[in-house]
Image 1 (cartoon, helix red, strand yellow):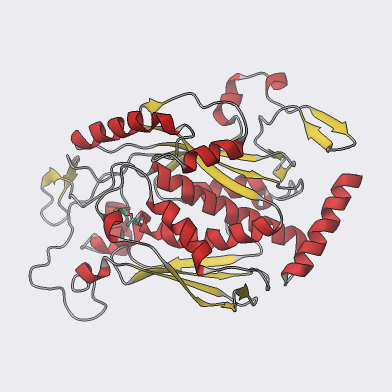
Image 2 (cartoon, rainbow, N blue to C red):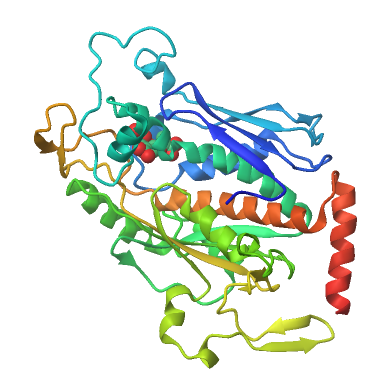
Amino acid sequence: MSLFSLRFLTAGESHGQGITAILEGIPANLEVSEDYINRELARRQRGYGRGGRMKIEKDRVRILSGVRFGKTIGAPITLWIENRDWENWKDKMAVAGDPPPSYVPFTRPRPGHADLSGGIKYNQRDLRNILERASARETSARVAVGAVCKRFLEELGIRVGSYVVNIGECSFPIEEGDLLKRHELAEKSEVRFPDPSKDSEFKNYIDSVRERGESAGGMFEVFALGVPPGLGSHIQWDRRIDGRIAQAMMSIQAMKAVEIGLGVESAVRLGSEVHDEIGYDQERGYFRYSNNLGGTEGGITNGMPILVRVTMKPIPTLKNPLRSVDIETKEGLRAGKERTDVVAVPAASVVGEAMLSIILADALLEKLGGDFMEEVRERFDNYIKHVGEF
Ligand code: EPS
């Protein structure tokens, strides 16, 4: 599945010269700055449990095309993020020539990483040629693309946010209440949990995971507020918004499950306990008494907040590696070790925001069309008028 009105590609290896993306389809006259994108990039780099790499990288974007005097011009936007670590890898990752004499190929695939399957598929006996691109470093490009989309959504009054639900076995009840408040509290937490007073418990847990030579996954929730009804469509499988959101989330490295609204819990509830009853009043128009379906019905947004829950598996690189086989000797050995993060769920939640922003910007442009922001805004306002009058 791909996008309908936007297109983007990312490129770059984790320890190559940098990570880049080209984004096409953003209307002209949208204000966007490197500073705005950099704020999102910095949010992705935070989170207790990251490894040594985040001390090296200070991700900064350079906009190489598509923006002039602070505004988009309708042309493809090229985003470039330099890898500071390239300095330490330029011999081992050189574009031309031979590897340095001291270089040892990566031949012990890590269970859970793309190493072995990718090596077989692309016939690469140095599994570094696979892991470099499979690495979640690539998500820095997605966050940069997502930041441009988030800027676009902001112009139409749509807010996207996220927070962590649990990290491994460490979880606490999350206070009922508004999603934006949860996001704002998460911004103050070192693990993006919407109650910073629990940070020390999360940090102790992550420390214990690290001490055991282990890694941990977890869950996060991403939401969007102010999304009008009518994005996506029931008429064809690939146009359903819930499917599009799920695919986008599942495409993030290490994600293993996506739920919308109540998600898996709807399997054990009765119909009357799941479906969101419809009301109407003059001021709000149509509204729902609950939001168990997470803002989508029949593959179409219904005007309620979009709420997505995503499950991340533990990171595959372990300090106490699992059993594996050396692809050269076929000897049963322990998997290779790399410098790694212990937990990256807080960072993943920021990537989730980026992916949801991309999908919603795409669905809005599919619905509204428009090549410049004034045109998009006028069509949006007309559509909102239609929603109010329906
Ligand atoms: C990653 C391994 C680690 C992470 C990396 C993702 O990198 P390194 O191998 O250089 O220590 O830090 O994430 C990032 C670099 C990033 O920017 O998020 C992996 O194998 O997926």
